Length: 463
Image 1 (tube, rainbow, N blue to C red):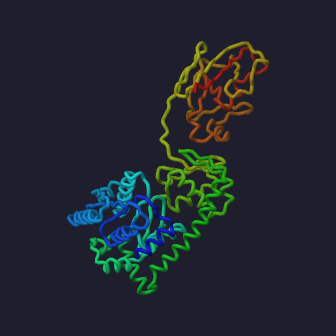
Image 2 (spheres, helix red, strand yellow):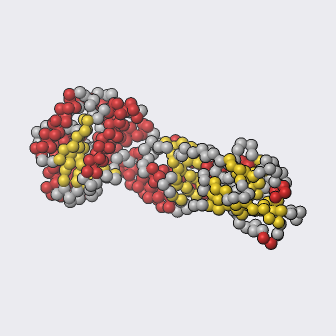
Image 3 (cartoon, rainbow, N blue to C red):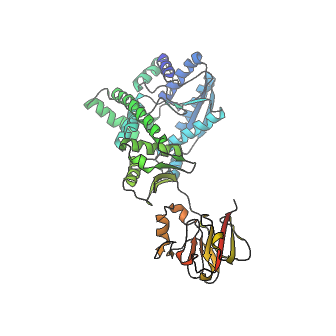
């Protein structure tokens, strides 16, 4: 069996010389088999074994006995031992997740914290076997999944390695028995209290009896076929993702909407998954329904509508782009200030300097091209001048138009992203809006051949 595990390690390049291999050991047959075979193999590859044990605190004194057993075993084997006691059920309740998921999160968190102590040099080895692969595939199939889900677990996935994934439980139990290796037995594994246990204890035996005695091997072969297809499609999707005029930052990823919609739907799905994974680093809790909702958003060109994805991210159409970003709590900035003609006006919340100057009309002095220097007929201004952000119901007559237009509609027509609309300064008097800064002045205040005095407003960014 050691040779079979060694062959797997070499085939998938799981362990290299001088690696630190963090081995998750519960004390049960699978993890003890993994530890035992790795201990023999390390004589050939020369790597370091570090054992991690998690006391889940779910079986009273029995879990304490598990910990003592593994600790003594490590002492005899002369390998480093690290353990932690956790409240799995309390953690599950706090996080509103299943006990199975809570146990998994706590285990991998501890594995990685221990791995960090060894400078993250090497890998974390877990004892998933061929039967676990079959159970995982069935669980995912029953929940609803695609090719990626049906490929099951990988021999290597980031910092996680699975050296015994191609070995079935019967082989493990035979090895343990023939070599008189002591193990701990978790009696809860014989109870159908968890979904995985129900599949292992009830569903798979029934499939073996009634339909396919070799279901474990059949599902294992299926997983390998699915992996080949999945890897090919994912590689292609990554290429297309990079061709989509993608804009990437820490906060969001923007994809060219038209280029995305021209892809085959299967590739659209993959590209969106690639984008989400690049943004948050994983696809946990990202389900098919999220991807389908995003596709519908694109197909219906639903500008402004938002899709909550999970993990604190959302997707929406921003005119020519599909944006996937972290949701932000918009900080309410208050701005409503009178502007002085005599002094430079400092608008701290926007880091702007605003200068106002009244002078006699001289057509040759007016610069119409600068977006942040504008000229107005001073005699048309009523009362003082003020600056604020937009308000519900705002209207004005944009330069060149005959009638009034809602400011909201104007900003939409100008294709101003929704998150920026509330941060555009508005300069107004007691009668109405003079200038939507950076975009358009009002027809009602424009300079004409009848203008005598001109008000120049110059805005400068203070950086």
